[in-house]
Length: 354
Image (cartoon, rainbow, N blue to C red; front, side, top):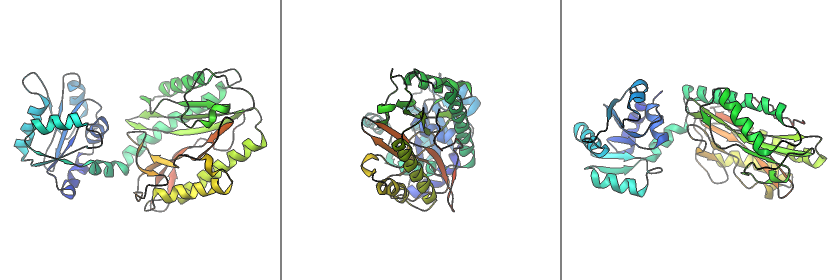
């Protein structure tokens, strides 16, 4: 999988002769390879430079770009300048979201070329997933869902949050994940009011909610899901809050489609929670795009007015968090279409009581 042709086609729009990919996500998006190096993309030719640690794997994986290895006599700046001279590059776009000031200064001093910030070129392309990307994301989601099925059999009073998190990771790996999308969040009872709480030694108890936020990477692409389950019979208030969150998510999904803003999707879900009297307990955004990275753009929050493109894969994760008592979050990932969205998450959302 690579996206070199798509990147090359966008160069005139940004007034640049070539695009330099130097970040891990950018490199993977460009040439479909996780290593370390630089990708130079022009309309006529692409070059990929890496070192001895990755050259053998790169030669087996990378297509569509000439591959060159650095050595003592050919540093990255030397190879980049050679490409600049050979390909007649005067304006070279770079990933300003990822490049540090030190990296920029290093390249700006070493290269005879104008460096032009062009993060929008790559971000715009990455926002709209193609079918190959979506296939990988669906596979990652199915792996996570298998792990969820297993964890439901594992949870019982006395098991710790850490043990639940470890079991989720183990099962996702044994079911085919490359690695985790992020460190799993597992919080129970009063810890559930911490949206990004860290699993601890607390033992889960009957009568509590347990919120699990987790995902894995397959084929370089992330999955992301959250489920809140009850251990033992929940109270009427717990059931009410759970239902409000579920209805909020369904309202957000109903408002989701290409051509609308993330702000409007967030508003549809947020209104349900506010109307139920819990508005102050929903502090984060409704969702974020998912792909090579677990957090991409555009976002579905109170501020983002970017129009959703066809193929955007956006999390749907409203929540209510009552400090010191409990919390509820339900998260799916939905792919934007012209007429609506496709929810690629198949795990049940109705309240599960263990």
